Amino acid sequence: MYANDLPDQRTSRLRSISILHWLRAKNRLTLPYYLHIHQGTVEIGWQAQQHLVCLNGEGDGQQDWVSRVKDLSQLAVAQGNKLFGYIGFDAWDRAQGLAPDKSASFPLVQFFIPTHRLSITADRVEYFGEDATLLPLVRQAPPCLPEFDFRPRSPDGEFSQAAFIEAVSTAKTYLSEDITKVVLSRYLGFDYDGDLLTLFSEYCARQKYTDAILMDFGQVGAVIASPELFINIDQGKITANPLAGTRIVGKDALENSRIAKQLLSDRKELAEHTLALLQMLRELGPYCEPDSLVVNRLLEVVQHNQIMHLSSTIRGQLRTDQDCLDAALALFPSTMVSGVPKSQAIALLRQVEPFPRGLFAGTVGWIAGRNCRFILTIRGMYRYGPRLFVQAGAGVMAESDPVRENAEVEMKMAAMLATLGGDRQG
Image (cartoon, rainbow, N blue to C red; front, side, top):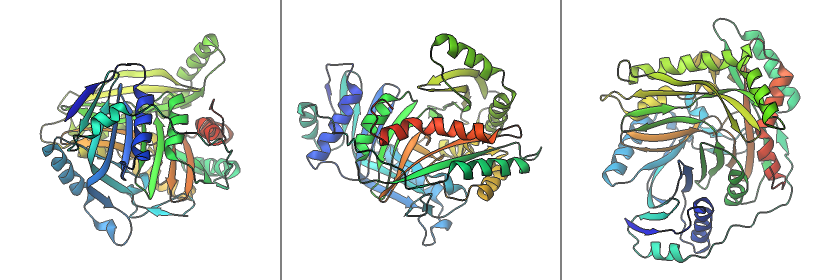
């Protein structure tokens, strides 16, 4: 490990983008790579010394990928490193990743141990790796952000508004005491020859998020400004921050206060959130020490740019005889993006949502022994081969208005579509 101080505490995020741009320009950046912003820290990792690829067809469906991820995580810990990667939503029941329009295939599970890592905080940059010459060069690298391509892009494929509204109407006919909630999604697809780093710089820098991630595995990549922490486990302490229940923000603080009160009194939104929250507690319970699993923040209203959500925070203590990945996978895919109960809801969405989800509504993050941090892959742009997809979903309950659910999906996609359209204010 090598370290130097950075003088300007206000520039760590822009500095990290500049560093990544410099590494690439100097041909020092080798795929796969990631840039992860969370909790005041930015981390860049690249060049796989160990690389796990699973659920990519060709019989991979029978692989015990969970055990392989655990083994690789232990190897990373032994090296003082971590394991970074993603699990696509469709890993729940499929053995091959496909773009929503089926134009490209990709692995549903990928993880790698980076050969090189940079950790950038407000006043410090650290290097983890064996290239002692790299850190002084990084520190001397001139600030240089990637140039954004303002050429407007229009979608050339989609699950249309009309199709989504019909899917919501159809799903409602199946809802009952046995299936109380299902989350349906829409997508728009683009031919895209642009740069993921420029998208990250323009989109994520203008959003409020829990974590922001840029990842590029070559065949598949993503730019994500996720508002939702899927799970964090640190020294056995479990935290999850589910979101469900949505409103668009108002023009001023007074209107926002009124909208928040409406959100907190909306039966559909409250039921959507609490039913999913209860299921998450049931899923996590077996992995927590007795009496340690609690909801210590319930039904708070949080604002992410132009959208408000109902938010709750779950905390618990991981049992000493349990693995953190098993605890994370007990929640996978999140009931907040699938439904209640999960298995039946996913079976229903497979009937009425006639396309693969790919990375959307899965999870991405890192694992190191008994520690891990994963976010939901929502509010993201996902690239498969030469195609880029924007995707968002909405929870459907018996009392849902299909037109209103479509409007919720559109407002969740708005900032991403604005960025692709060349709107710097998106």
